[in-house]
Length: 315
Image (cartoon, rainbow, N blue to C red; front, top):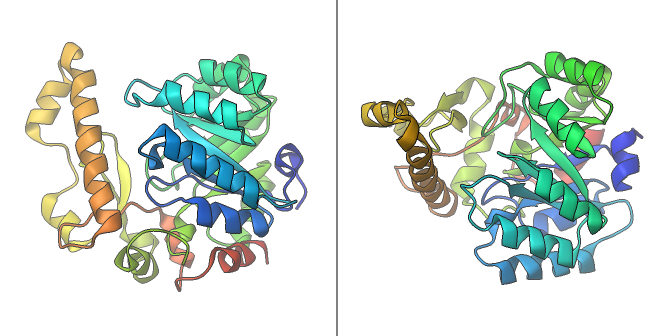
């Protein structure tokens, strides 16, 4: 399973434990590195820059040969902490940064000065060509089977389209829950995979047991799209509460979204409200629960340590 991704990150297996808001943590990434893959944490999982700095230092101390670690950065205006987070990452150092939701230009410039590789989330060829031109080291191809905010193209269509038109490695994100899925993505031309949802039900994940168990009890057919979290379609488990509140934006949100001047601010407010609701769902189980996950939970049959989840992906 040696690919361009294993060469880039000096890992044993071409797998990135995907960054998941409020789920990913140091313990998960440490175990991922020990298992021979890369682990990634959203910088936004840390409330302060000091906490982010401490997490990086801890990961450096825990790092082993055959594993690597990185952080995800939201690089648009919705993340007011972006510049400070980038500065901390470059100062403390990590193996890679994954950028999302905005132009990665400044991140690529600063990260490369610090010897950090930059991978960029993309959902189409147009943006992929743009980030390649800015100097990205690889593309995270977010397909229509990804959890959270997903793309519109199938894994095969997106991977082949990017490979035919770009010259940097393509890492497939979405639809991977077992070894056969990884083999399929590699057969399409991917150099590796980014896997998130199967790791929600890990013993190291710092979320409620109810959230973990939901990933065991529900399957691919129970994943639906909702606009009620961030204003942008997002995949969630179709719990009774989700069924009750519906999945479409409210009429007033739709009305305000038609106003070009107000649209940006409406999205920022909805994103803030949605993230707070998601945090409550991750940390405290109530009847008002919205759990983010992707269809790859189909292969999640038990709550397991990270090392066992990795073993299932590579054997």
